[in-house]
Image 1 (tube, helix red, strand yellow):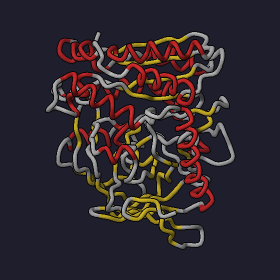
Image 2 (tube, rainbow, N blue to C red):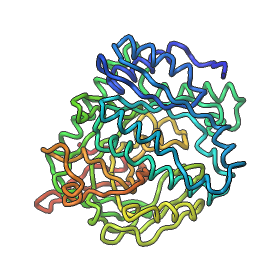
Image 3 (cartoon, rainbow, N blue to C red):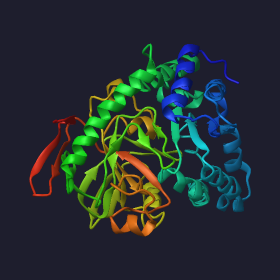
Length: 413
């Protein structure tokens, strides 16, 4: 195990926050954790705080990068069309029985960069299909869930290659703690205030009930229609089991469901996308009638095209999110190669599955009802960043008026 040089007080604060405001665990509720083996100092603290909060059973499931690599180096070819469906079916069953979900990110985002891309693509597709029962419970907010991060050694070196291992881990750890807003004396209160600020933004956007968003800037002229009865969300959200949780720590975004058939124009990425071991840079796409009809990238283009061909919904949008350029993560000036952080540094869009929670007035919408309102369905959900200090965003209201939302990457209201 890694002899962590991280501040133990901050590890404890992050663990406490993840239980109190992240997953918002309730007395008697079970908790399922997935985590890299390196993060065990954090997992131990999470379990401690979970049981203090009255958890039923806490079950951690660990992954290890070396074991993952051994499969791609030595496994028989047929292995790459298989996935542990039994595990994901069990996870789905646990969610149906009100088990809370926590994920800890921390592995090297480029772990599989040197592996056979065909094997990586096949394994990813098999895993996405097998994971669908569990993923649907999460995207539909059936249960309370949360994602936080740990500065794994390989990830830290990826972000800070010029530093020695221990220095890189400490620097990334400090960045995670800062971005997660746990450096104050009372992180729980800090997040209560942060959630209040985000709620003010979502309340305004919901009151405006925009028909569409219009993005303009270098390489970007994009119109995104919004789904019928869409609802903006951000920060703390109520899951279908009635528990208010913060799914993402950190989180600086407000987001909603676009209309899968009503997107047109061109848009360019403003930050690189790290996807399953491949860095995809300078993405440029064209939408017609909601569907990507042209796509290019200066690096990782073949992987991008494979992603777009994942299924019928993978060329359409499932999420649109607004993040000010002045967000704490953006101001760090770090490319994390991790979507949880990089998406909270800039406004972004997501290809694939929509969040069925982002609709007004009715819970438990059927798949047919979601589709009829414009929500997208797919086995993937991949965020990539399109915001910067050079991007303006206008909203078209129900009377056709164009209302400024962002000017040069900052809120207008």
